[in-house]
Length: 323
Image 1 (cartoon, rainbow, N blue to C red):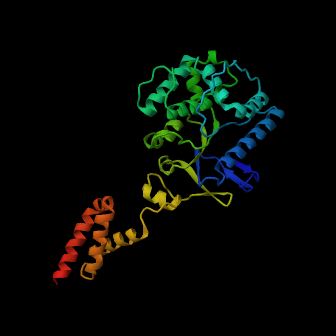
Image 2 (cartoon, helix red, strand yellow):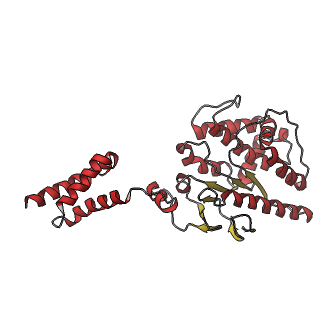
């Protein structure tokens, strides 16, 4: 499906293809990642309202903002939304007190033992800890995943009586229900080990959902094969055509995040050490010695990393000195 994004803040008017299972948007702070998700949220709500007016079924989408961990202590009522119009208005109102929305999700959804057990199994699987009851407060990372999962489940069940959701019905919803899920900075509070398997876990649990994610994490770009990756340049999304699935993270840092893997002089020294292995007889022994000593004294971690080629290059340099 192609969405028309209107001119919004720093973001230019453009079309955005969200037909893939997972779309990941990365970029600098203040480049427009959150603005794009907000714009998509507005577009989805408008499209859903149009379908409602025409008495047609529309696409359900949810937007999960950044850093929404604090859970309200307010008592919540069981909100029954009777149609798309009420769903749309509730979504928009929820952003004014999102912590109350999260508390309401927990108060309503976790009363169902099927859903409660599913969330416990999910946390156990992702974080490799034993969770049988969702009592008390967990780490921010765990709380964040609970919130994400409950939001998706709510979008699947908002028009269903939760008490009537059986395990058979719930599994059917998980497998078949299509929801467009927009999550801002999905890696917040998560250890890189959790980041590495998070997208795969979500797609396994919500097989028919489409995820649109923003991130600052290089790791997330490389750990799910079937995804579209976009950078933002001058207010426009630019699709990355390279296959970066399990690409070396040093390349990701340097190519996409503009973080140099090595200082320029060190890179030149390492390249010269590598050239020494190829040039063999045509090597400047003094330059080679200086490069090796610089690495040994100032960059011991790199010296250990490239120890094998350094040792071979040293032998060549010593041999040339004797000749």
